[in-house]
Image (cartoon, one colour):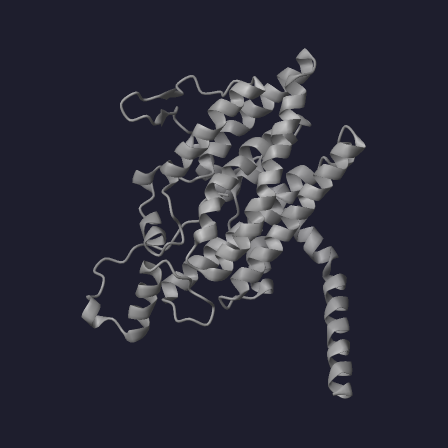
Length: 330
């Protein structure tokens, strides 16, 4: 998912002898690669950064169900249908893990959902693009979930305990999703000329948005420094993008697809990949809510939330009655 914007750095950090005991302990835990837990003291800015990042991550998992859920009834075989259903169900689970992690920071599930359906909260811009063909399921799995793995595996070592632990299971399941997407594209590339073209077209459409998922270039993303200092984030946007491209190049050769970047090459001096110019204007335009499917995605989420109100009310009433029975029996 895209890296959520972090709070701005504050110039002029206090000297060590000016820190409170709580601040000093917090800094020591971070420096010693230990975890911050919900009951530990933490700076307000750290808490706010985590709430923003984790809730946006959760929103992305929930909204991300829509582009693929659109193909469950149209999958080309029963096997494909079952696999896609399992994947979409996994994404729902990821959202629940992450909402639960965010709740340990003092925000409620209702608050987060209200922020999402009102349009106040952001989610990954990648999910605001359409999925017109079955090959899009392959491209999303290979490219989008592949980018998510590159971005999220380091989060397993995030300094905040509930977030890091949630990411362990999320990343295991995302690895399955990436392999599923790769296998879909491989099958298409071994098929008819029409199927090969369908696969290449999907790769062409999803390649650049997947590169943009890591966020703006490092020289345009100064706020990442604070998240890295707090060890929420472990690598810069450009470092993660490099890892991703390095993963894609050999896999594209195996698939037989062409990455749609005529400028892609390896710099012999640095050993780093040189990539073409990403359309950041498009990225920010979609992020502002003006993408092809922004309005549709939010409207569907809003409708689903309203239609599910009776389920939430029934579950709450059942829990209340069970609690009353338990109390009466005690």
